[in-house]
Picture 1 (tube, rainbow, N blue to C red):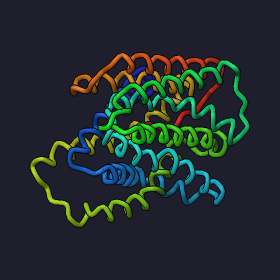
Picture 2: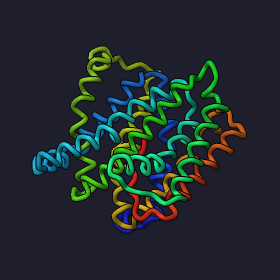
Picture 3: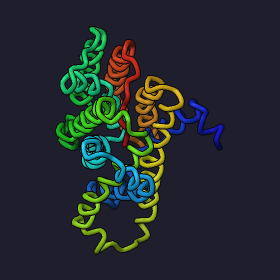
Length: 300
């Protein structure tokens, strides 16, 4: 097992398959759960799983560090958990996976806005190309139809912006916190408000087990345990074993897995998926070309 965890290619493959499948798992969970229930259950479940690490880590943190860790958690581990399922009530899992690859561009943008981190001309060009790809996807795909409103696709973009803020804050303000402790701490902190949200959804008080709930519960359980908690720990393990540059190659692979699952499930696949997706990947390549040790936030 130790050899498997230290093999960067196995880790990369497991993370890619897990996070790339999360969009379809969200879609299947929406059959019986509301977006708010899905988001809250993911955060609460991950918080409970990681509390044995998170609570001791929180106790030993300084007040200043705790504030930054809380901010990191809000933008990367709390807000996106709700935005993705809300968006996927109208947006296909394939499109969600492709738009999620915009995260590296937001890392570039917010790195400059928040901390004055300057970029190369090629990186700026990459951001422009990437956004053109996202714009073409949103405009020409089902996100611009009456059944899938533009605003819902923009929620995925907003989630990507949250991941971007999360990434630069991790790099600039919480770099001294161990990756595993940071992961556990943010979920432990944000499990509390998520539990409140879960209570007000009424699922705790009114839940009744029905036969049609079995599969969605299985999908959501897998999403919570493997797609949220464990996959994130493996992601940070990959960064520690290799580099953030290598680990960020997940951004190239996630859309492929998401689209494959979408096609298998019968989702519409058009030329604009290929065109927009290629522009986004070209943009990511240009941004990554000269950027040293970028640090990306965890996925859905």
